[in-house]
Length: 398
Image (cartoon, rainbow, N blue to C red; front, side):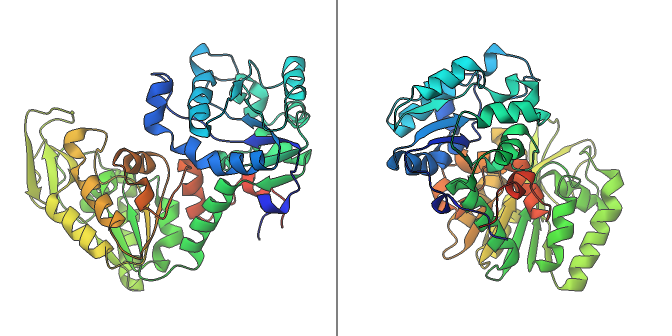
């Protein structure tokens, strides 16, 4: 079903509560946030849409996991500073997200003003979806916009509670997320490929079960490849194997073969003598040549080149998970080479999952070269698994 979009809700001149996801790295202050501000920039179109219609814009978000208590290191003011720079106008940070002082501050806003409520998770009622907390948030505004796709899989007060009290619609970011992921799943231009990496097979089981028979190609890298290679009987040295997923990996490869899906596993691997950013020794070996006691850290250059070449022939690409231990610079080459190959694929629809994959794409400066980079790690995973997202279900149908 199609959910109500922002253009279908009368917001002119109203006070609008917008759930955003500004859960960004904050440890090093506002200047560091600029390096990882994809989630802030992705919400700008919705904020600017509302400002053009003389709205009072009240933004709300969580940050980190403060456990229902005030944590001075997790205040949103530095995020508001960066947002103000991006918007080119002031963003007023408030000291709380509910209560008389907050209600008074919102009431004093003028059309075109933007304020940022304090961290929602400073109140236990956010994660417990407390009805009273939802009502207090809703009481600040005339209508509600859900533009935090990254938390749409959470049944919290600000995602499913507030829509019970206010006219609600999807923001432009959430609409783009749902449409991009939906088209890739339901009506892709073929060949359709899934590029799956990251640490664990268990994180991707439901995605594989939902997607496998729909695909033309399945590419596997990262820690996932270790378990798939072990399932083929290959030695993987000291690398961690999900022994309880070996049967699943074997069955997945058998199902793929029966469905005519081409499964791509790396032909060579980058290995290290220690699992460390600066190990004593590093080598590139054939897939059958991993030394005992060594760790698989990345796919090799030959594998990365082969993946990039095959992906260039695909017209729709779903990517979730790096090809190696990307956060260690020495083992980022496989992810970088594959990402550049995808980015340079002319005419392809490229949909990148959130979380570490989005961070990798952002750090490589390739955000604008992808069709869509999701802001939601867990949410995009659950969407691709075919599961309902509570924060989307709470939005009325169009």
